[in-house]
Length: 174
Image (cartoon, rainbow, N blue to C red):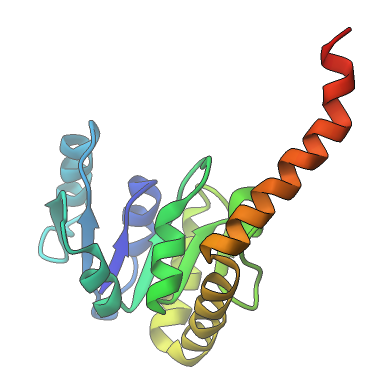
């Protein structure tokens, strides 16, 4: 079972050539749903992909997932991957700077934005040999639980603001 919440077309196209058994649950709503449903139908993937809409039990679904995919084109602060990491779910993320602030190759797998073939290869490899993805998921969970506490996050923001004030405060009065 694969879960994701963003960049759906890339993921749908990446899954199409994979012959191994898989299912994709799409959580959330958005203006592209009808277009994506037509894409799923045109690729012959209707029996394998379910559009769930708004899901109140995301934690439970993440705990049941074999892989969390997040093929975003951009992110300000991707909270969904942090939730997936905290649940111990293996992840495949777009290679974006915001995700690199938390993770590296020891904790998640990255793929270039919109690189359908790369996404296909990583998903195929994960389904065929899950041990590496499971090991990475353990490291991602450790990172989030260690660095994602309220205290650590508050300290990080305080440090950021102090650095910003030292760097820019003197120039704003000119």
